[in-house]
Image (cartoon, helix red, strand yellow):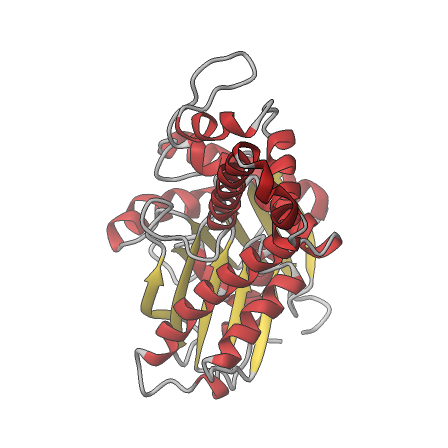
Length: 357
């Protein structure tokens, strides 16, 4: 590129239920700015508030970049964007926000899971791959890339939400933790009523580990005793004693994930280690299903892109890879995507045609 050519910038926006992140990359893929705003859930907050959050994140990114406000391409990934009608509703507004034409290949609006698959678009030798996401929930997708680096979804496994799925997710880790705590509480009640058997059981390592887990849950949820656990799950209250929405149960259980990870990784709590191994195996089973649905896709030649808070913990990712190996599923490359917006902006820059001199 000669000295008189305009610099090129590429914008990617990760729209999440907790926050909105906008990343700007320059030619070559280096991220030069990150903008952050509040939640931007397309399916729950309405189009106006959704677009306002995106605009705030974009403004924040440009303020940090300190470069002329002009982009060559934009990629928005959002939960709830699942069909062409959703894209047609959102994309024109996104195009106006960044002063790009619509319809145009310069403006891409997809489901947020596609952003985690951004590394697939950066490598010329990569033609297919798996995306596995495990955060509060979980989903596994298989993609192929076209000659222009576009992503095309081939299959999906899971992603059915907390009532019907979310295998290997933070919610499932928390769910299993409460189940183990309730089992421990039942055992304790029995032992207290039959003091003669107390000695043998109390000396059991698993019993001690379950006791530690139960105590940690009671502390986190500010409960006095294990007898309050069930009510806290089925009829949760906030600090002021007001009933919480049923949907809050998912987040309360998912919130226990940090405690389970701490006990497993820092204290080698056997029960918590078992929970993580169990959930990693469940997620590995989902990934294996996505691989085996097509004889044309060989995992050994493909890429596994992982995202979400759990899979960005190296110890948990290793458990998943070990479980996959037991199923004879291995990948040529595994890419952990910590910042989906950054990965997506870099992919846009990598795919951009070389500017004429």
